[in-house]
Length: 173
Image (tube, rainbow, N blue to C red; front, top):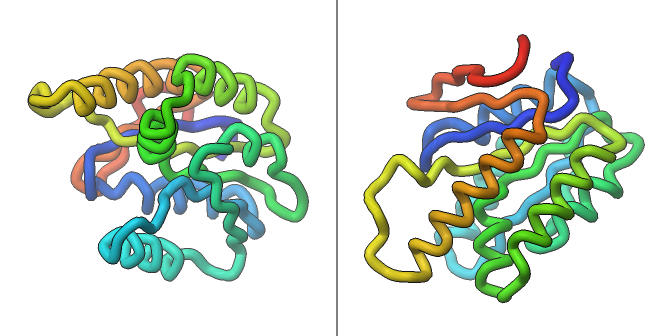
């Protein structure tokens, strides 16, 4: 990976996390996984366990449901790359905790620009579906679209993953 920052977008179960992990694994033998998920139910606990099982001993994990920018800034040796999975869960956590989403986005962009290591970020593309019927879901969908646009503009490259197939839509390589 000759690029420093990359955003990996895709729908649910599209293969975006697997693609992002493979990208990070080409960068360094020691990697930092920034996890944004919170295990509030059995389904999420199972999902988290499956993701952990997919990572080898070269990965260390930091749980950061809210503090993603801080985790990116703190990324340091021995890690050679940071993988954040995923921005849409992070956004959900911020939204439900009533954080200032614009300020959080600013903080994330600043952290990306100053990152001490290459960063791979995963986010759901939620704009391909129908308009949600309730106000909270519409607010989330709109906030996710704005965040993805901001992060894509700040990253060196953007990949879109559909049916397990990555397509580079911005950047070289």
